[in-house]
Length: 271
Image (cartoon, rainbow, N blue to C red; front, top):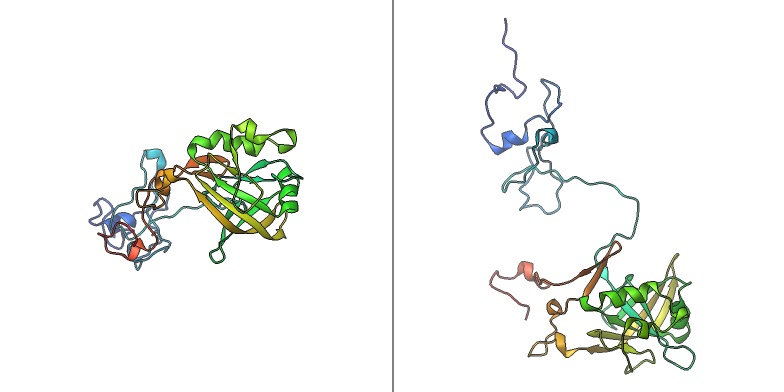
């Protein structure tokens, strides 16, 4: 009787693979006898190519095996699930925006997460607010507000100002926060927040569920508690709040600085 060919190009099935590449090419559980799995023999090293899709061996979960990534493996598997379009940009800042404070509107606070820097010169930021919110009409009328950046210690107050309405009472009193006069706008600062950005609205863009307020930053207040002895800002010590998918988080560990990836390994800080 003629000898049957092996499914791996002449290599006996009862022999263990000699290399990691052979392990990668091992057929997954349930593959028909004699068939060959798809391989990517020309795949570059993960360290040489950024973002290249690579394929790793699939292992049988019923046997208790779990895929393991080994340094030097040329083939990786990146498994993704497609979700519907959504606001899953994360993390984003959790901020308290104070407004009002003039003869027409009492001081109020609204908590927002749809916010961010939009321009460096002049310094500008954007905040998005639903038109039905109480603070919307205040900011639309006064064309100014203050972005107050809270810390982990203010997480409860931050959440409170996001779920309570200023129509029903004084949020400063309800959240136990202290209003302080600003330098360039009528809206008050929140004293307990270590960073306060006074802003004047330049443009409003209607988007859909939210309208985008584009504003110029006209003054910045920073607490000395988050400055080092040389006056340098220490964000890593501030424990600022972040927001992601309905949850609050705290920022902490510093990983590097802009441009550190091309600096010498001995360079610890930017100049």
